[in-house]
Image 1 (tube, one colour):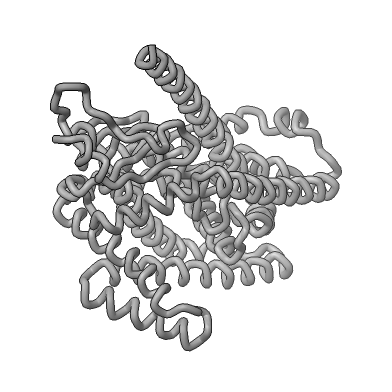
Image 2: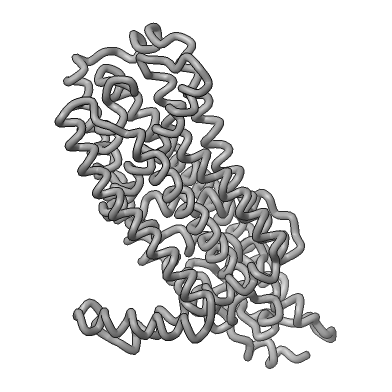
Length: 454
């Protein structure tokens, strides 16, 4: 195998590294193993080779496009712009939370947290249960990635799965409509040595499984739990009705999205026909400006979903394992408000049946909060989440007006801000580690060049 052959191989480059234009070279007088060279993925470059087609879950051309998009989003200029935008949204989020907390404190006559802790006593230990649920959520999410990585590569990469999970959730939390998670997951998977054809598929497969489980759970609890909800006053009843309407719209939107993607992924003819109809309707309504461009873009998503669903059909054991962990993740997430209510409530349940009923009500109310926030484009449903939580939980028999501000703060940290803090820490450590590695490689390269010159 000659050096010229290697130079002809297509490469996708990550900006900001010294290996940007460097081509792999063969040792003098020896034949290198092209397969090893092609499959090697470093910080400086991600190689796309036709031999990857054998390992890829989705079509290599589609994987290449997805990987290019992820690399483009990681370029210094776009990354800087993205960071500034994310910081603005985060500041808005914190400002809204601060305003609501300040208003609630004034309403509750500024009752200090220490007084509430003394009054609630041992009940405050329930917040530790919320922290445990937070840990279970990330463990379950990590295990989904772990199962998919192990099945597709044969390698056990738990730490990689954890990093991909935490960084993905972090970028989902700080970007509008949760659009930042997948590109970061793809890049982290490729940097971990997983082939691009697999790395671009795993986040999509995980998203399909999670969305289906998530949609089924919210539909079940909404149908079963709604009859147990009632307003304690005319004003509270009006707020509850409005939130139910917003939540119903959110549920319909979520369910239709999942259904459409299942239909798209179920078959080539159905998928293409449905996409063609959606784009035509959008074009006629002047929502879509460029018909061909929009059609091609959506068709890439169709191919991704069709390949991913086909992969899941062939790997049923992995599918069931991922569904199991997705169930644990979703149920743990929706159970967090129950631990907050148990910590701050004034009327403690006296029996197992009453506790289970309270759990059902808390999950149903949280689902209403979650679905009502779907209509808000800000990250984390800022504003609507806080408002709906106060309306749903700040009434008698739940948390109450006196403790609601601290309940809101505990709930928001357990379900949102802890995710940001954890993801930021993991992302920062990873960035520092990669910078140190790059500098080390730079020094070795300079030393090697100096030796060759001498």
